Image (tube, rainbow, N blue to C red):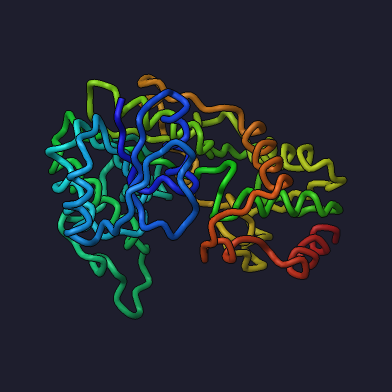
Length: 343
Protein backbone atom coordinates (compact mmCIF):
# COMPACT_ATOMS: atom_id res chain seq x y z
CA UNK A 1 0.00 0.00 0.00
CA UNK A 2 1.42 3.37 -1.04
CA UNK A 3 0.05 6.39 0.77
CA UNK A 4 0.62 10.13 0.64
CA UNK A 5 0.06 12.14 3.83
CA UNK A 6 -0.44 15.86 3.37
CA UNK A 7 1.17 17.01 6.60
CA UNK A 8 2.74 14.09 8.40
CA UNK A 9 5.07 15.87 10.81
CA UNK A 10 2.93 16.67 13.86
CA UNK A 11 0.00 15.38 15.89
CA UNK A 12 -2.65 13.77 13.67
CA UNK A 13 -0.58 13.85 10.48
CA UNK A 14 2.38 12.26 12.21
CA UNK A 15 0.13 9.66 13.84
CA UNK A 16 -1.28 8.76 10.41
CA UNK A 17 2.19 8.43 8.91
CA UNK A 18 3.53 6.39 11.84
CA UNK A 19 0.51 4.07 11.92
CA UNK A 20 0.85 3.46 8.17
CA UNK A 21 4.54 2.64 8.60
CA UNK A 22 3.66 0.26 11.43
CA UNK A 23 1.34 -1.51 9.00
CA UNK A 24 4.22 -1.96 6.58
CA UNK A 25 2.96 0.62 4.09
CA UNK A 26 5.11 2.84 1.89
CA UNK A 27 4.61 6.41 3.15
CA UNK A 28 5.33 9.76 1.53
CA UNK A 29 4.73 12.96 3.49
CA UNK A 30 4.39 16.39 1.92
CA UNK A 31 4.87 19.54 3.96
CA UNK A 32 6.99 22.66 4.22
CA UNK A 33 9.31 21.15 6.82
CA UNK A 34 8.66 23.89 9.38
CA UNK A 35 6.75 22.02 12.11
CA UNK A 36 8.14 18.81 13.53
CA UNK A 37 9.67 15.91 11.66
CA UNK A 38 8.22 12.98 9.79
CA UNK A 39 8.52 9.52 11.35
CA UNK A 40 11.64 7.57 10.49
CA UNK A 41 11.02 5.51 7.38
CA UNK A 42 8.72 7.98 5.65
CA UNK A 43 9.86 9.67 2.44
CA UNK A 44 9.67 13.45 2.84
CA UNK A 45 8.83 15.76 -0.06
CA UNK A 46 9.14 19.44 0.75
CA UNK A 47 6.81 22.02 -0.71
CA UNK A 48 3.95 24.43 -0.19
CA UNK A 49 0.55 23.12 -1.21
CA UNK A 50 -0.61 26.65 -2.06
CA UNK A 51 2.07 26.85 -4.80
CA UNK A 52 1.04 25.34 -8.13
CA UNK A 53 4.59 24.38 -9.11
CA UNK A 54 5.08 22.51 -5.84
CA UNK A 55 1.84 20.58 -6.38
CA UNK A 56 2.88 19.68 -9.90
CA UNK A 57 6.24 18.44 -8.61
CA UNK A 58 4.49 16.43 -5.89
CA UNK A 59 2.19 14.77 -8.40
CA UNK A 60 5.27 13.65 -10.29
CA UNK A 61 6.32 11.65 -7.21
CA UNK A 62 3.23 9.44 -7.44
CA UNK A 63 1.20 7.39 -7.92
CA UNK A 64 -0.35 6.50 -4.56
CA UNK A 65 -3.20 4.26 -3.55
CA UNK A 66 -4.58 7.01 -1.32
CA UNK A 67 -4.02 10.51 0.01
CA UNK A 68 -4.79 11.40 3.63
CA UNK A 69 -5.11 15.17 3.99
CA UNK A 70 -4.39 16.28 7.56
CA UNK A 71 -2.80 19.66 6.87
CA UNK A 72 -5.70 21.77 5.63
CA UNK A 73 -7.05 22.94 9.00
CA UNK A 74 -6.38 26.59 8.18
CA UNK A 75 -6.43 26.36 4.41
CA UNK A 76 -8.96 27.98 2.09
CA UNK A 77 -11.26 25.65 0.14
CA UNK A 78 -9.77 26.80 -3.17
CA UNK A 79 -6.34 25.60 -2.03
CA UNK A 80 -7.76 22.20 -1.08
CA UNK A 81 -9.46 22.14 -4.48
CA UNK A 82 -6.21 22.90 -6.29
CA UNK A 83 -4.37 20.20 -4.38
CA UNK A 84 -7.07 17.61 -4.95
CA UNK A 85 -7.14 18.36 -8.67
CA UNK A 86 -3.36 18.09 -8.91
CA UNK A 87 -3.39 14.68 -7.20
CA UNK A 88 -6.59 13.16 -8.60
CA UNK A 89 -4.92 11.39 -11.53
CA UNK A 90 -2.17 9.87 -9.37
CA UNK A 91 -4.24 8.89 -6.30
CA UNK A 92 -6.84 6.21 -5.90
CA UNK A 93 -8.70 7.73 -2.95
CA UNK A 94 -8.73 10.95 -0.95
CA UNK A 95 -9.37 11.02 2.81
CA UNK A 96 -9.99 14.56 4.00
CA UNK A 97 -9.93 15.35 7.72
CA UNK A 98 -12.61 17.98 8.37
CA UNK A 99 -14.41 18.84 11.62
CA UNK A 100 -17.85 18.83 13.24
CA UNK A 101 -17.68 22.63 12.91
CA UNK A 102 -18.79 22.12 9.30
CA UNK A 103 -22.34 21.42 10.53
CA UNK A 104 -24.72 24.35 10.75
CA UNK A 105 -26.15 22.98 14.00
CA UNK A 106 -22.90 22.58 15.96
CA UNK A 107 -22.65 23.11 18.95
CA UNK A 108 -26.32 23.78 19.62
CA UNK A 109 -28.01 20.70 18.17
CA UNK A 110 -27.47 16.92 18.25
CA UNK A 111 -25.81 15.83 15.01
CA UNK A 112 -25.60 12.93 12.60
CA UNK A 113 -23.82 12.73 9.25
CA UNK A 114 -27.13 13.69 7.64
CA UNK A 115 -27.30 17.02 9.48
CA UNK A 116 -27.16 20.17 7.38
CA UNK A 117 -23.72 21.51 6.45
CA UNK A 118 -22.72 25.15 6.27
CA UNK A 119 -22.61 26.98 2.96
CA UNK A 120 -18.96 26.87 1.93
CA UNK A 121 -18.28 26.78 -1.84
CA UNK A 122 -15.42 24.54 -3.01
CA UNK A 123 -13.57 27.44 -4.65
CA UNK A 124 -13.92 29.93 -1.76
CA UNK A 125 -10.92 32.00 -0.76
CA UNK A 126 -9.74 32.63 2.80
CA UNK A 127 -12.06 35.62 3.23
CA UNK A 128 -15.26 33.72 2.60
CA UNK A 129 -17.49 33.72 5.68
CA UNK A 130 -15.57 36.32 7.67
CA UNK A 131 -17.80 38.21 10.07
CA UNK A 132 -18.71 41.84 9.35
CA UNK A 133 -17.82 44.39 11.98
CA UNK A 134 -20.44 44.49 14.74
CA UNK A 135 -21.82 41.03 13.95
CA UNK A 136 -23.51 39.47 17.00
CA UNK A 137 -24.66 36.15 15.55
CA UNK A 138 -22.85 32.80 15.45
CA UNK A 139 -19.27 32.72 14.18
CA UNK A 140 -19.44 30.24 11.30
CA UNK A 141 -16.26 31.34 9.52
CA UNK A 142 -14.16 28.27 10.33
CA UNK A 143 -17.05 25.89 9.68
CA UNK A 144 -17.85 27.47 6.33
CA UNK A 145 -14.23 27.16 5.29
CA UNK A 146 -14.14 23.49 6.25
CA UNK A 147 -17.49 22.75 4.59
CA UNK A 148 -16.14 24.29 1.40
CA UNK A 149 -12.99 22.21 1.63
CA UNK A 150 -15.09 19.07 2.03
CA UNK A 151 -16.94 19.94 -1.16
CA UNK A 152 -13.62 20.53 -2.93
CA UNK A 153 -12.49 17.00 -2.06
CA UNK A 154 -15.78 15.35 -2.99
CA UNK A 155 -16.23 17.37 -6.18
CA UNK A 156 -12.80 16.30 -7.40
CA UNK A 157 -12.66 12.64 -6.36
CA UNK A 158 -16.37 11.85 -6.48
CA UNK A 159 -18.69 10.27 -3.94
CA UNK A 160 -17.08 6.83 -4.03
CA UNK A 161 -13.40 7.88 -3.88
CA UNK A 162 -13.62 10.72 -1.36
CA UNK A 163 -13.91 10.10 2.38
CA UNK A 164 -14.70 12.92 4.80
CA UNK A 165 -13.81 12.53 8.48
CA UNK A 166 -15.38 14.93 10.97
CA UNK A 167 -13.66 14.69 14.36
CA UNK A 168 -14.68 16.70 17.39
CA UNK A 169 -12.00 17.11 20.06
CA UNK A 170 -8.84 15.09 19.39
CA UNK A 171 -6.57 14.39 22.37
CA UNK A 172 -3.45 12.32 22.94
CA UNK A 173 0.34 12.38 22.85
CA UNK A 174 1.61 15.25 20.73
CA UNK A 175 -1.42 17.48 21.31
CA UNK A 176 -0.62 21.06 20.31
CA UNK A 177 -3.87 22.76 21.38
CA UNK A 178 -3.18 22.30 25.09
CA UNK A 179 -6.52 21.06 26.44
CA UNK A 180 -5.47 17.79 28.04
CA UNK A 181 -1.94 19.01 28.94
CA UNK A 182 -3.46 21.91 30.86
CA UNK A 183 -5.75 19.65 32.86
CA UNK A 184 -2.88 17.26 33.60
CA UNK A 185 -0.63 20.09 34.76
CA UNK A 186 -3.42 21.45 36.93
CA UNK A 187 -4.12 18.05 38.46
CA UNK A 188 -0.44 17.56 39.22
CA UNK A 189 -0.40 20.85 41.12
CA UNK A 190 -2.93 19.38 43.55
CA UNK A 191 -5.22 21.06 46.08
CA UNK A 192 -8.86 21.93 45.44
CA UNK A 193 -9.33 21.80 41.70
CA UNK A 194 -12.21 23.53 39.98
CA UNK A 195 -14.30 21.02 38.04
CA UNK A 196 -16.81 22.47 35.56
CA UNK A 197 -20.50 21.69 35.27
CA UNK A 198 -22.15 18.37 36.05
CA UNK A 199 -19.93 15.37 36.88
CA UNK A 200 -22.11 13.03 34.81
CA UNK A 201 -22.03 15.23 31.68
CA UNK A 202 -21.21 13.04 28.69
CA UNK A 203 -18.11 14.05 26.70
CA UNK A 204 -16.76 12.59 23.43
CA UNK A 205 -13.04 13.28 22.92
CA UNK A 206 -11.23 10.82 20.69
CA UNK A 207 -7.62 9.65 20.78
CA UNK A 208 -5.42 10.88 17.93
CA UNK A 209 -4.21 7.32 17.29
CA UNK A 210 -7.78 6.10 16.84
CA UNK A 211 -8.53 8.81 14.27
CA UNK A 212 -5.32 7.90 12.45
CA UNK A 213 -6.18 4.21 12.36
CA UNK A 214 -9.69 4.89 11.09
CA UNK A 215 -8.39 7.25 8.40
CA UNK A 216 -6.11 4.52 7.09
CA UNK A 217 -8.88 1.93 7.25
CA UNK A 218 -10.99 4.18 5.04
CA UNK A 219 -8.07 4.73 2.68
CA UNK A 220 -8.27 1.04 1.74
CA UNK A 221 -12.05 0.66 1.93
CA UNK A 222 -14.15 0.32 -1.20
CA UNK A 223 -16.54 3.13 -0.37
CA UNK A 224 -16.66 6.87 0.13
CA UNK A 225 -18.79 8.93 2.47
CA UNK A 226 -18.65 11.04 5.61
CA UNK A 227 -18.08 9.90 9.19
CA UNK A 228 -18.27 11.59 12.57
CA UNK A 229 -15.09 10.60 14.41
CA UNK A 230 -15.99 10.92 18.09
CA UNK A 231 -16.31 8.55 21.03
CA UNK A 232 -19.77 7.05 21.62
CA UNK A 233 -22.31 9.28 23.34
CA UNK A 234 -22.56 8.52 27.05
CA UNK A 235 -19.53 6.26 27.33
CA UNK A 236 -17.33 8.79 29.17
CA UNK A 237 -18.18 11.67 31.50
CA UNK A 238 -16.45 14.81 32.65
CA UNK A 239 -15.97 13.13 36.02
CA UNK A 240 -14.31 10.13 34.34
CA UNK A 241 -11.96 12.49 32.51
CA UNK A 242 -10.91 14.65 35.45
CA UNK A 243 -10.60 11.67 37.78
CA UNK A 244 -8.30 10.04 35.23
CA UNK A 245 -6.17 13.20 35.18
CA UNK A 246 -5.82 13.15 38.97
CA UNK A 247 -4.97 9.44 39.05
CA UNK A 248 -2.50 9.65 36.17
CA UNK A 249 -0.51 12.46 37.77
CA UNK A 250 -0.54 10.92 41.24
CA UNK A 251 -1.41 14.26 42.79
CA UNK A 252 -3.68 15.05 45.71
CA UNK A 253 -6.12 17.22 43.75
CA UNK A 254 -9.69 17.21 45.08
CA UNK A 255 -12.38 17.92 42.50
CA UNK A 256 -14.66 20.82 43.43
CA UNK A 257 -17.66 20.80 41.09
CA UNK A 258 -19.01 24.20 40.11
CA UNK A 259 -22.46 24.52 38.50
CA UNK A 260 -22.64 26.02 35.03
CA UNK A 261 -24.40 29.15 36.27
CA UNK A 262 -21.70 29.92 38.82
CA UNK A 263 -19.04 29.65 36.15
CA UNK A 264 -21.05 31.84 33.81
CA UNK A 265 -21.59 34.40 36.58
CA UNK A 266 -17.80 34.60 36.90
CA UNK A 267 -17.38 35.05 33.13
CA UNK A 268 -15.44 31.84 32.63
CA UNK A 269 -14.73 31.47 28.92
CA UNK A 270 -16.30 28.26 27.72
CA UNK A 271 -14.13 25.76 25.84
CA UNK A 272 -10.85 27.50 26.74
CA UNK A 273 -10.51 28.65 30.38
CA UNK A 274 -11.78 25.28 31.56
CA UNK A 275 -11.07 23.10 28.52
CA UNK A 276 -13.87 20.82 27.27
CA UNK A 277 -16.50 22.68 29.33
CA UNK A 278 -19.32 24.06 27.23
CA UNK A 279 -23.01 24.43 28.02
CA UNK A 280 -24.43 24.20 24.48
CA UNK A 281 -26.87 21.31 24.20
CA UNK A 282 -25.35 19.65 21.15
CA UNK A 283 -21.65 19.95 21.83
CA UNK A 284 -21.34 16.37 23.10
CA UNK A 285 -24.33 14.89 21.26
CA UNK A 286 -22.62 13.81 18.03
CA UNK A 287 -23.72 10.45 16.70
CA UNK A 288 -20.86 8.21 15.53
CA UNK A 289 -22.67 4.93 14.96
CA UNK A 290 -22.00 5.10 11.21
CA UNK A 291 -18.26 5.34 11.85
CA UNK A 292 -18.41 2.56 14.43
CA UNK A 293 -20.16 0.33 11.90
CA UNK A 294 -17.33 1.12 9.47
CA UNK A 295 -14.73 0.03 12.01
CA UNK A 296 -14.02 3.03 14.24
CA UNK A 297 -12.87 1.92 17.68
CA UNK A 298 -12.15 4.34 20.51
CA UNK A 299 -9.83 3.40 23.35
CA UNK A 300 -10.86 4.37 26.89
CA UNK A 301 -10.29 8.03 27.66
CA UNK A 302 -8.26 7.06 30.73
CA UNK A 303 -5.71 5.40 28.44
CA UNK A 304 -5.36 8.59 26.42
CA UNK A 305 -4.87 10.57 29.63
CA UNK A 306 -2.16 8.23 30.96
CA UNK A 307 -0.30 8.08 27.65
CA UNK A 308 -0.35 11.86 27.29
CA UNK A 309 1.01 12.33 30.83
CA UNK A 310 3.75 9.81 30.06
CA UNK A 311 4.61 11.69 26.88
CA UNK A 312 4.85 14.97 28.79
CA UNK A 313 6.91 13.44 31.60
CA UNK A 314 9.32 11.95 29.08
CA UNK A 315 10.04 15.35 27.59
CA UNK A 316 7.40 15.49 24.90
CA UNK A 317 7.16 18.97 23.42
CA UNK A 318 4.19 19.94 21.25
CA UNK A 319 4.59 21.94 18.08
CA UNK A 320 4.48 25.63 18.97
CA UNK A 321 0.98 26.90 18.25
CA UNK A 322 -0.90 30.05 19.34
CA UNK A 323 -3.94 28.06 20.51
CA UNK A 324 -1.92 26.66 23.43
CA UNK A 325 -1.92 30.04 25.16
CA UNK A 326 -5.72 30.28 24.96
CA UNK A 327 -6.30 27.42 27.38
CA UNK A 328 -6.49 27.42 31.13
CA UNK A 329 -7.93 29.55 33.90
CA UNK A 330 -5.53 31.58 36.03
CA UNK A 331 -4.91 30.38 39.60
CA UNK A 332 -6.24 33.70 40.88
CA UNK A 333 -9.56 33.40 39.04
CA UNK A 334 -9.89 29.76 40.04
CA UNK A 335 -9.34 30.70 43.69
CA UNK A 336 -12.13 33.28 43.53
CA UNK A 337 -14.60 30.72 42.18
CA UNK A 338 -13.50 28.07 44.67
CA UNK A 339 -14.09 30.57 47.47
CA UNK A 340 -17.59 31.23 46.10
CA UNK A 341 -18.27 27.50 46.20
CA UNK A 342 -17.43 27.40 49.90
CA UNK A 343 -19.91 30.08 50.91
